Length: 109
Length: 109
DNA sequence: TGAACATATGAGCAATCGTTCATATGATAA
DNA sequence: TTATCATATGAACGATTGCTCATATGTTCA
Image (cartoon, rainbow over all chains, first blue to last red):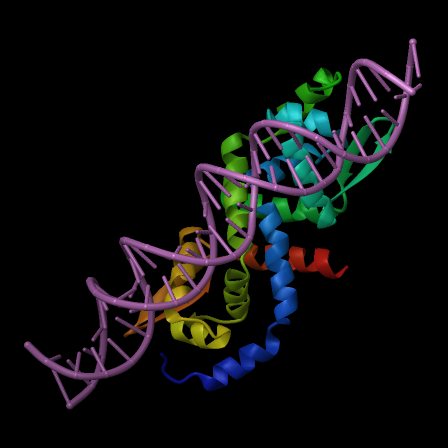
């Protein structure tokens, strides 16, 4: 299915990260690839929030939000702390903000 | 389904981008959320490449690669130029690199 | 302890997605 | 024109995904 580019491929192949890392990268961005999760992360941009506040904000079920927070937490994108019955979620690190910011720039430039 | 957080919500809501932008952001990251597309973008990191070279590199069908290039092009993430029968693809702008770089950092920090 | 509240979780279903296969388009060279 | 090469495209199928619904867990307060 091809003409000749063996030399090029050898060079590129040497510079590519491992398949495992590339897979992890895809999995990470997959998490950003859903509007609900983007909204949740944006809601947490400035401050922590409890689950039901997020549900209220997005006009969605507590269950739906809880499921998504679990996904976000598993990827170390958010973290949580308990205060009585309430659990507050916040962004886990600054990469979340900068990744979203880069995407924003791409769209609005 | 909630306790009281009307004041907080009002404040957060005012700072949230439009639903349309948030949707677009999700759609953009969805494109990064696939290993094949990540690999293609990584392959183009340094230089342009023709379709069949990418297919060779990834050990995938020309058809599969072509479909994915179409998706990437529709999102303005890659661009192409023709040279005879061959069509060369390259990264469209630097946001691709910086988005991937941020994801990489999140994973490896 | 029991009731009420906040959150988490498992199963199931509809919708979306990525690949394959077959075929079409477009370009070059004889 | 015809053959061949490089790429694009449409339909279809299997796999993944996000939500809903019902229910479970965990905490507080009376």
